[in-house]
Image (cartoon, rainbow, N blue to C red; front, side, top):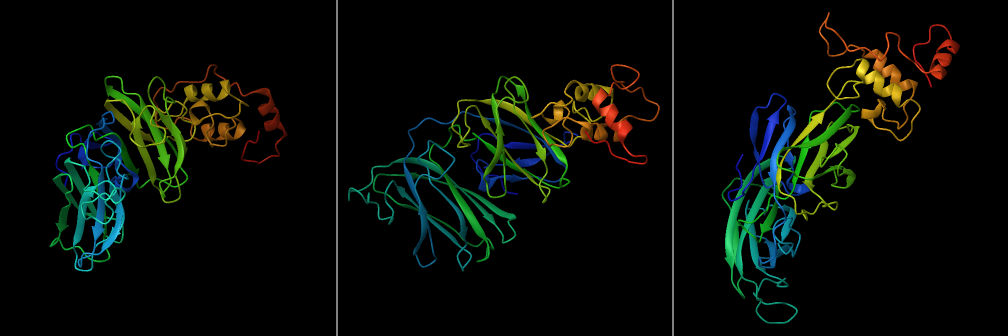
Length: 371
């Protein structure tokens, strides 16, 4: 896969064993998110604070092979200072070409003039232009890093042809109007190959310095499902939930307090994002089910609005006998045969009296404990 030239930081993908798999940039928005191999469960990267202003205020347009304007955009890019342009999901021309023009703000007919004032636009300065191409199955098939320097009243053209693209393919084009600045402000990624309906725990940890993260979970339309600031303790974030039916999770890491996920934050530093798929009953997320997890369940029994890590193993928000069932079914999970297993606080499980009464009332042969 081609890597965009000029990016200051690259996303490093690690398997559960820590083997580096590759680099994906840019991946600073939902459309350019990195789609990870099913073996990947840990991602490490460093993010930088949002860049200050000062770049040219651009307008970006896509054109047919005959020169007709297809569509344009003013300030849609996640890169730069908020005044850079972006195009998403634009079809490749019938001749396999991608034809783009860059001009200044409010030049929507790309003649070099500000359409509002009727005078040449005043925007000037360098920019980088990242073009990513996908086939009809949403598989990335090309990546191109272009650049230019805009002058007042000027319009620059960029043409990609001869790469074997077809009319069924589509592309996105993102401008960074502060090249060399702090453009790697967010990481968007999709974990794949997960078991639908399984519980997941995603959490960030810092590997150097103090990086205050915000973690987001998004649906396949890019709409936020949940976000978290400090749920993993300290400056770190945590989201838990159920894997969707397609076995994919769309997650985003950004900095505090970018709760709109626009890259607007002042945080810089390194982080690691861990995706865990714990067995039922594993409250402390160590991959094993034992008395330590039972203790957590017992301490929070009958509590509501609780989390998996507090003993809610079926994600219904209540800690009850259904969660105990899951713990009991998986007790000793993760331990080799004959290994010492941490036991609950006493040799006999201290099941609350209400639950014990329910157990006694159950008809003979029943297999499930109900609260």
